[in-house]
Image 1 (tube, rainbow, N blue to C red):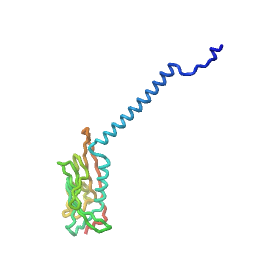
Image 2 (cartoon, rainbow, N blue to C red):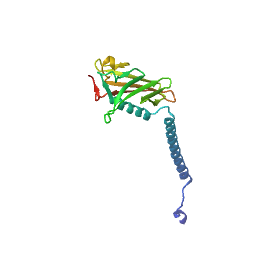
Image 3 (cartoon, rainbow, N blue to C red):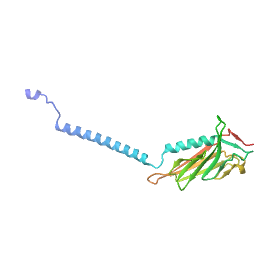
Image 4 (cartoon, rainbow, N blue to C red):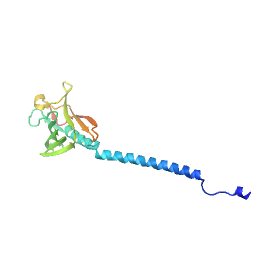
Length: 188
């Protein structure tokens, strides 16, 4: 009778096998999740371009386009653009200073440059294509050429198309319309 009532301490062999199997499955799952996470991190880190760079460039361009300075009575501050570049003037309303801005895409360098105060600054690199389009407010269409001397005004909006490829040659296209505010613009 004493043998039957005696309690055994410890685990049976089957309990140990089940516990080790469950622990192995958990460890393998965590390892594979970490491996996928680090692989994705490396992919993002090694990609040719990043959404952050694109967003910073668009924010800068949007700020400049929104502070366009133009006088139709004066040919001194023209707004000129084609598919690969756009040149215009901006005005800092606090200081009153007017600066010339040139955004220029170089297909050979695959780079979008900003030229301001005779400094050529690369905004985005490794761009397969960058095109500028200008919205004509009277005729309601997008044109790939604009000259304020011909049209006697600035476009209502500028649309910028970017094409990128990643390291796997996957093509990404982005289209950004930017509204040009009328503040600082005199159509007279």
